[in-house]
Image 1 (cartoon, rainbow over the protein chains, first blue to last red):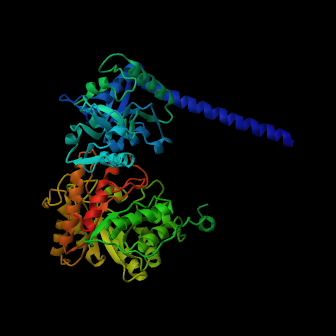
Image 2: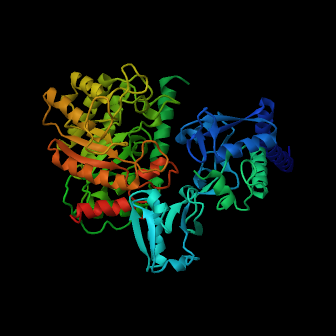
Length: 261
Length: 365
């Protein structure tokens, strides 16, 4: 056999292998969703100990923002949401071994996990934020000469220290607990705590900590469906529940009033 | 292919290839060690467990240890996995551990080295990295010997294994204090052969209230008694123990049914009752967590106060050698509650607890 013929055969084999791989990836991406529809349930992994995102009500039902998102996704898929309550540290493992189809659990995006996990578009920012009820604070620069409350020792204090690097003339006032800091007229708190003070305004997000839905990296079709539902929720005009209205899912007074404790 | 000739030939080829590979590996980039330093502190028992095992950048290793020294903690506990140091039998790669130990030594820190993590060649396929069969105890002993010999004068304390009273850390085998004592005996003998001055610590026991027969763990007090019954008292110079406070303040009194910081006093009482009252205990993991959602966490301010009070309490215990809090820094965010055990962030930003502990250690509080 000539050398040219060998090269042709080799090239064809390589192309065949690539085509087979692409077909496999496509099949894997679709098979997860097909299995969910065949099963009739979307299995959601969460740690139901984190109100207002997920917790158990008096009847043992999972309630909260994440539970609502999960039910909305399941409804759009034409299946029922099945909640699998797992300790937070076990959520990724549960996803990896296929015990759950998705994790919706106040889950921060971890860029170092994206070899195994695909994240939806983020839907909530739990990062540190500067909030206020003072009319004279409209921007970060306006905190000059003022006192900012933080919970002593918290990540909010860390964020406030960084804020002080850009606005040196600010006084940081460490408080013994988060609630005391939250009720000050000017404070740095995280996005979750901030839900408890809907009357305060967010002046600036000092650092991001986005929550998203996680699926197995191979479950691309399911991820697309999840993103479709999240987009629909963001664009909805209803005030509460499944259809919350914010253009930004987080930082919306409407959303925050729905889930404030 | 099962003929010994083939097996030996394959092994030899692998060994040669590995040796060539290690020899060809570029040396780790180095950063200057700098001048010798000493730790300034009012509490010489203060320590932290660093997490440099998976920190690959030498400047970060150096800076971490520098920050520990500046905080005022003279002790560091660090993990030196056997599998990393000896990827094939007798083929050693000390580059990473050299970097950690040289910098720690130069910063004036006393290193307690935790040894464990079984390499693939010393355990069955698909077994846990904490699985070691008794036939392989000698191989582990060889690693202990090599480590103790290499770092003689720079590492004076070795912890043999970690939390052997948990199934997770004992290769998911039935928990076996007698078997662990056998391992400890081998390690002790080999460590002393390499460096008679090195102090071998048994343990480090995990505080647990596991009921008798539990498949996941054995109560640490029961485990220690069984170790001593098996002769462990003559195969260790000290005991390593973990002392997490969970939601309790450090002064919370010890009791058999409670896991708290002072539970370590129960271990001391067992040593006393068995005639080892002079044997020091080193707390090689301890601390509180301030994650906003974890059920075993406390408020950040409480964590600061509890940590400092725990250091103060430890100073009063004459039977305690050191107390090292878990964990000084992670190389990257864990994105779980674990991040809320640390003193500084992955990007080296000191948390308020770092500043508070530093102020305490320098007599400013």
